[in-house]
Length: 412
Image (cartoon, rainbow, N blue to C red; front, top):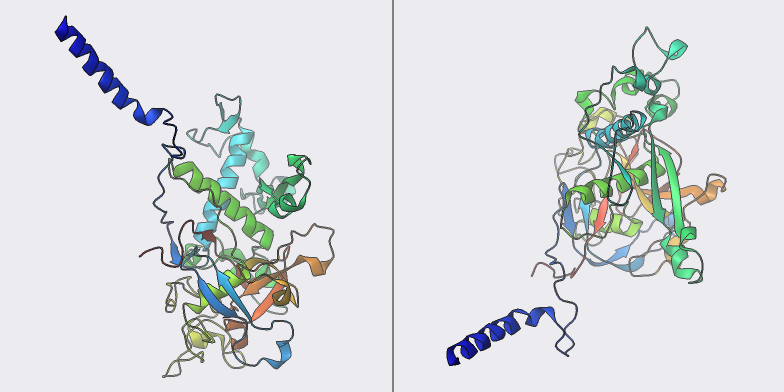
């Protein structure tokens, strides 16, 4: 009897110990069994530490002194693509949209436990199937009987939340009023090579720049601001679908203007260019970026138009072509006196213009200068703009991702 009592007591003691972590103790311990966070390491991106800088032109720029007065700002850490998004990277997005539309036409769906339907990506597409003919040019739209994809069909649909509106609206307002639905034709405008240059023979670029393997590693162009936003939303969904248990609530996005300038400086305070110098040529007189030298000697810097996205030397943060090659979209709305009104912590002015808005409200900041610009536009502090629904042969983009957790000394 004594042995039975002792054994029963041991069993109860073990059960009590095993249940300690699963019941309330009367103490403030926080919610247990939370996911562990050790940070992420996005492929193709480099970490840009948080910091403080004097934003704007470093030298006295008399013509723009009053529209971009220098401003002291602080930036949180973030990840940034080490190169501009290339043709081949953007083509992955184009193929996803193409294939998802084809699967939808063929009704290749699988239901889940909540009565939602998802594309069954395991089904192999048969592009010779007559059911997919609507995705190709037909009849008198065909050239020499060649089967070609109708790129106007490549429309990507997504939703985004207006956080600015959410912060200022009545809590009792419907949540649905914060959700915006977008439809964007995402195929690059290859005709920019003709449209941007009157009385020039650039048709070979129109036919080949986005498609030919020779240009796979060159920056994608002919992509407007709306298309860049759609790409980043898709890239976020791609990441989330394969990250598994990895916790990440942030989205890939375009950099705000201040983030772009901070990254371009590469830790060099007051330097005019990303490489830390006040000149666009080295001691031997060789150009240090892809721009328009002199009066138009385009090939002197090694590229007649764009060059590979990782050409030239990276800056001290490991970023390539932050000056020249292609100018880059930012998320910031362009206003002449924007610096004066922005906050000094992660400063930004955002505005999502509607189609019927005045042109002035569609201006978005572009940075870095391009292969066709003079060196003034390559300077770290120089800002310019383009309309968000406009495509150009000299504007591309790269993505950023906000770093979560400690930032200034996060690796110490």
